[in-house]
Image 1 (spheres, rainbow, N blue to C red):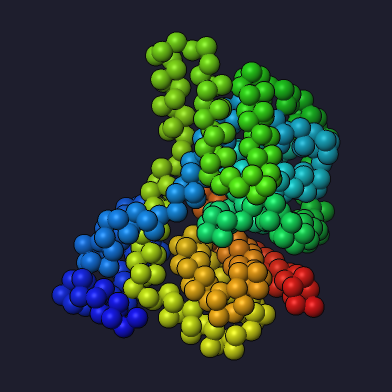
Image 2: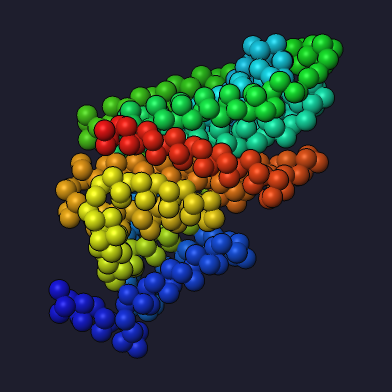
Length: 449
């Protein structure tokens, strides 16, 4: 082992210690990401390039460190959701749900929270808020009520609901791909605690806000006159999109039995929908539609992930994460329960302060390095679930903790309803603490009693 380390160290620029150098690159990258002075994809790609130029990685090892299953899953789902959104199906559901509660402000708070959580689990939380928030403004304007409680509830619901499935939140995509977990693994393990947490959230917001929000019967009638059918802009595309969405989700559920990676299923579903979407179009229109569909993919996120994978792999190659894993085992005395409880709270608080994606990407290889010493993969599963719950629920801790939060704040500001950092913190920090506490109790009961 020492000979290997010396050989590797000799390749590093100026003979520097690869552990120190790789850690410095990671820390500087994270600091720049936190300040948001540069685009996050640029920061990640520059960090990956520095890992190669300094000799910590070669181009071959950097590419080997990229999890292409995660990238395929993200690209596939972004394409499917982007095309499906053009049919207006998601707006239809939001308006339909509002009318089902007779446009009652109290019932609206509940139903929009539940719809947001449900869509976040099946799509992803960022896409969900982009679809639900404009409808929320439309309805609250007609009811002449303050949109603020609804927006805050939707932010929390999006992060909580996204925790329930493999595809709902990026940390879960990272964990699922790294461990080859199935869609149903996440559903079976996390849906119960997500359901309980959502129930607590809805009841709490109803007690605090729901009973105080009132409107006139005339305003309710204005909402009831909205025809949800008008939300559907393309019935043919709606049918095609629903077919592919259900097929892909069904594929996720059955994937473990056929040993097919989730990324492959998502990319296949995207390819099928692209085929159906462009069927019958002439050459020029078909190419335009394909280019338009590819434009719906958030390539900034994709390249951010690619660079981040390489940076973290540099730490792994240098031995930093293995050393951190050993220190963590010593600190927890080799106890799975102590490790799980520590990971869930650290993940929640760190994710409150910084983006949970780079944090989870760094934690995955560290926890993997601990498995052999702590009883193997099966024994360590509570720790993995703790990482998922802590990172996802931690997204509710502050306005900058998750992308969905920032997006809603931006949309709200443009509508003349700014959400300040400190005002949001009054609601977000208690929500994060309560939800993480529920998750910690759940893990204890499920795995350690």
